[in-house]
Length: 228
View 1 (cartoon, rainbow, N blue to C red):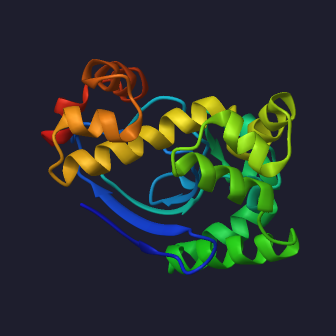
View 2 (tube, rainbow, N blue to C red):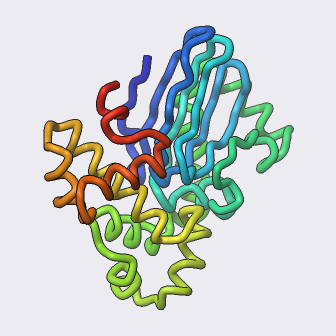
């Protein structure tokens, strides 16, 4: 069972998930986000930005509560470059120390969503807010801009944009653009748009290109994702 709702700041999303013992793993698609997590069996964790789908679950029953930070926001909240968390699930104590996290974990047992939100809001405020460059680049790429156009919009040359993107998003702008384009494509397909039209509207060369790109990022073709 999975539910989500807006967290009320910086475009973040709160989500909850309950998994049964022995249930089939869930395919979590890359989305450019960093998640701050509490789990009933593992305490507090950070899920870094993924380049390909991550299979989650498949073990004992557990409850998850997560705060999904949109692309570019994670470094301001967590205090580390996103590239250091890429494709990783890291105990929060590894980043902030056992003593501080133990206190937070005790409070989170009773109200995990409230504690995760409180932590993120306080740390984001202390950091001076999210990096405006990350907001602009992510918005441009999410709208379908090319990497060159996004670089020009923020006044950076491609190499400088690549460096800043690794810090903010965990990977270069080309990878982020592919991931965000897949998200747009799947949203259109789930709304009933035929895949050939989805490919044309999202800038793929054709439906075969869409299928290859989704398989590369998600591990399965779009038809499998849409059948679930």
